[in-house]
Image (tube, rainbow, N blue to C red; front, side, top):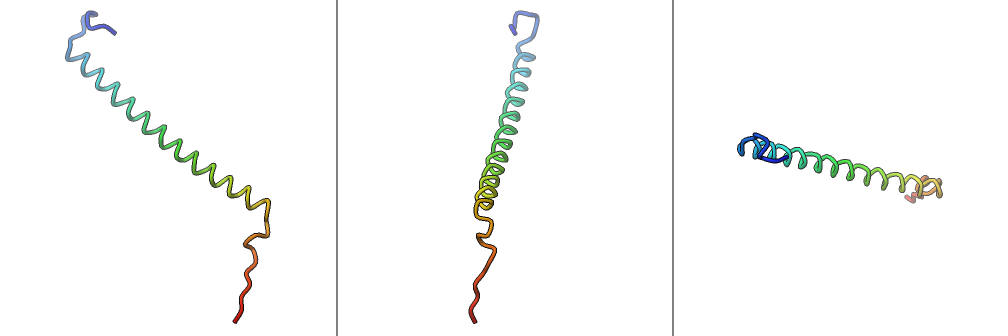
Length: 64
């Protein structure tokens, strides 16, 4: 986009600012998705680890 297309400098600055804001929002959303995927991956790894040793942690020895 060029300013010479009949667009005023103010309009160009506003559009540029809006694009920067939208880009920032998109990046923040992607970061949230990446964090959620990371957590789900850790939970999946934990479930897989428990499936290898299914009896691990299922019994407790108590003495009185």
